Structure formats: structure tokens, C-alpha cells
Length: 197
Length: 165
Image (cartoon, rainbow over all chains, first blue to last red):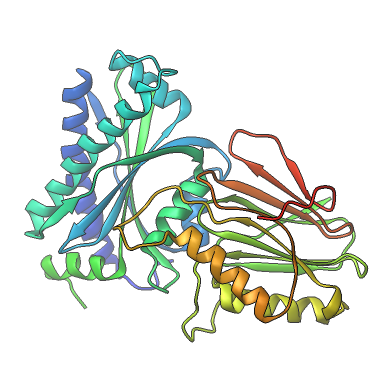
């Protein structure tokens, strides 16, 4: 599957994602006052069409919070929640899921979780990374993921997707977390880890 | 009825009655449908980016390569060039990245329209722009094209209602 990265490189990227999502889960846990579990992240370099398929059913309605990353590494962080998961998060925060405040509450969750992930990556690699303000949308899963991939596309048809799941303990509530670096961004990450081409 | 999924960057075409060409959840991408209803042939490209810049490996991905390649494919199935019509779906602006001027969705929309103008293919219906994702379905036998936005019902774009943007 991975046409551009070797196993060692994918392992290193997975480890980065692991540390990033560990930090992110701590931030989420503090906000919600609940324990948060993280899954072992997956790292895969896939053609766009397969990357979209790998994330889940194309037409499933989800809320996506997107955070652009600028600086030494260009990337996009995408937090995906099913509509039920989004509602649970809102009620844990004391916000009515149908209220117009809900979108901004989710944006804020995305912001805190996303920036702690990015800051962890930055601290580990010494790369300067500046997160942009979060944007959120509730739409078809594939529309959200495809738009993020197209926004980072540089002509190549390979997307590197680092995927981790965060699960709130005691609630049937989880979210998945994707880091989609631009092509140059991945090389920069790998170079800093001493695994550049 | 056989549904053929046309995923990101892919294109498909058919002259088989019963075939339906589908792109699920288009965001900033454009579903470009070309039809010759008299010959009962149709094609669909899932366009991701405006310009190929010389790349030739996956013509469906780019607006400027998808249109001519799809037109040639339909002609190979018996379509008459002068009868070919286009329907566009997608090109939404769901998020804005890096403040680099126009969104990918808008640039895709403009690039597909430009490519069609160059080929002198009329756009008979379009449902592009806005902020919502859409699914497009093209029924080969009838040339019927429908679009469905997230959380909405399916709407016939062509031939029942001709919506021009």
C-alpha cells in the first residue's frame, strides 16, 4: 500500500501520532472531567480514493472540526465525531446539542484537542507549527475528508493519514483524529526524526 | 440496477441500460457528468483539482483532463459530439485553508466550466458551490441526473428541472 514511505518511516510517524494523541487525550480528559482512552494509531499512505474509503461509510453524517497548521510543517488536523458522539460531548460540557452553542463548543473541543496534538508534535520534532482557528461542519463523511485531502493536495495522489481514536470512558462516545500533512510536511517530519530520504 | 462507484480522481462511462454511475459525498470535488441521451450513453468524472499541469496518469482527477478524456470515451461508445451535454454537481466550500484566495471548490467549478467551454459542451444543469457536500447519481439509460445534499432528499437535476447556476 505504501508506495512512498518505508516501514521504518511509517513506524516513526505512527509513534509521533501516538504521542500526539496521548497529549490530546489528556487535554480532552481535563475538559470533560472523564478518563479518555486512546487506540493505537494507524499510519497509512494511500491513494486518495482509498484513504476516503478507509475512514468510514461515505455518506455517514459526521461533525468534522478542521484545524489548519502552518509554519515549518503544513498540515491539516481533522477531528471526526458521529452525530451521537457530538451530542454526548455537548451534554458532558453542559451544552444542549440542538443549541447554536453546540457548534462552537465542538469547535473549542477540536481546538484544544487539535492544538495539544500539534504542540506535542512540534515539541518532539523542534518544528515551528502554528495552528489556525478551528472550522467545523456537519456533513457527509467523505465530503469532509475529501475536501481536507484536496486542500492539501499538491498533484500527487498519495495521502498520508495518521488516524487515532479517542474514547470517553463510561460513555458510548468516541472520536477519530486524523493528521494529514502536505507532501513537504511529511518529508520535514521525517528529516527531523533522522529518517529523511 | 448496478451502481458503479466513481471515487476521488476516477472516471467511469457506460452504454449499458441499468447502469448507474455514482459519486458519494462530493465536497470540494466536482462530479462532472457527460450525457448523450439519444445514444443512451453517459460518463461521470470525480474531479479533485483544477489543473493537471502536464500529468497524464489519472485524467479523472483534474478538470482540464477529465472533460476531454470523458468526451472521447463517450464517443467511443457511440455518442455524437454535438449531442453531448454536461451536468455539474459539487464544488462546495466547506472549509477555507491558508487564505490562498479562492477555495478549491470554486476553482474546480471554474476550471470544469472552462474545460467544457473549450470543448463547446453545453451545461444543461448545475448544482455547485454552497457549503454542503452532495452525492450525484447518473442513470445511463435515461440520462437522468440527481443530487442529494447531506441530510436532504434526492433532487432530480436533469432532465426534469433544468437549474442553471
